[in-house]
Length: 481
Ligand code: NAD
Image 1 (cartoon, rainbow, N blue to C red):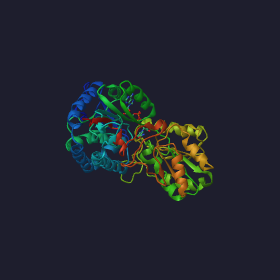
Image 2 (image 1 turned 120 degrees about the vertical axis):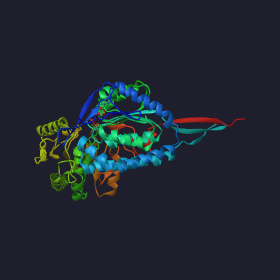
Image 3 (image 1 turned 45 degrees about the horizontal axis):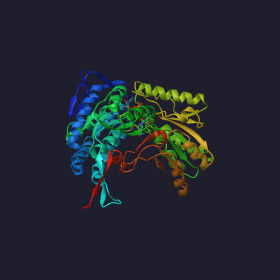
Image 4 (image 1 turned 30 degrees about the horizontal axis):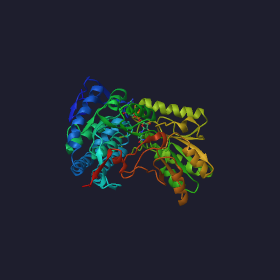
């Protein structure tokens, strides 16, 4: 029998206190990839106590001492990028090219925070007294970081890197569907010189280990990425001990294409803003809003590109889109497609399980374009979290903005137009946290990322990632004789 992937607590790989395990399934084959120790509330407590002890050391090191360790950590992530990518691909089905990109991004984000931390400090403030107020950015303490299954390494690292840089210690709880890459990542952190207990990883069910972390009196901050539904629950529970909370939640983002855009370029690129990672992306532009007069020309390109997307074995370098993470997730997505058709949508492309050698046992689904949608349909309102886009037309810029904003979410978005004034006007009018103009890109290590409305509270990445990982102290020093 293959070895069990144990928890990582206090610098050691250890079994769970109750001896429970669960299987991680390779979505490309439906077979067990690894058996993983399943943490429970006792393990959460052990990890928090280890992190509390480690904070006495890590939290009192100078920013420059911490940066040295984090630079080494970034180098190790880079050196092990292929290994981390392959784990991600086998654990959650991400296409290997995307998984390699993610490992590179993890190194870049770690390096960004290693370089940022000695440039992030307080100020001196004159006041109406003899003396001066000094402000200090201080670490919070133990942070509990709870992450979803769709970008396990990236999201785990987006939270861990600024938390560690700021001097906090970490208990990371990945989703049970894809816990493996961050276990290996955390081992690299220890190898880089993190003290034991500074970064613990406790895979396990949200209801047990997640809850125990959120309610633990020694945890100072909860950083959560996941569904809005669970985010609400976490905010409620964290309120009991007034924890600092950041929430990165769901999305239903729009890609707006105006008739004056480069329609060939938009049609060639925009499909990847929703279908990448099989649509399991909080930023997926799952509503395609297109100006009515440009619809036919845009869709000609968009549908042809979608039809050409290579869906298949995620370990093959030619694959652009791998399987969905689980059989259950694929069924959920197929249910949405059926619901869309019932409500009047037309399947312009996809909507089927692909056929081909070796694809039968994996959780594959062809990227799907649903035409003739309106913004009140279920497929246009709910986050599908799969490779499905709903096409909606508009007549005017005002209508495009109104439709894009007519959602409880506000995470991401993109717009395509050659009109420079319109680029800024529409980008400013959208009630959403991150937007790409004539681009699918809206997330960079250096730029703040986070949602408006029910897509979240707080920001990650950029210097804002440090703001949300620190307390701000004011000290008045009297100069009176
Ligand atoms: P999820 O909300 O079901 O689970 C996320 C994490 O929370 C998992 O680790 C889970 O075990 C844990 N959890 C569940 N119940 C809990 C509880 N009661 N207490 C504490 N922890 C609990 O989300 P998911 O299905 O893993 O991921 C998909 C969702 O994540 C989508 O809604 C997606 O939009 C969102 N997401 C958001 C972002 C962002 O940056 N805004 C990024 C990626 C994913």
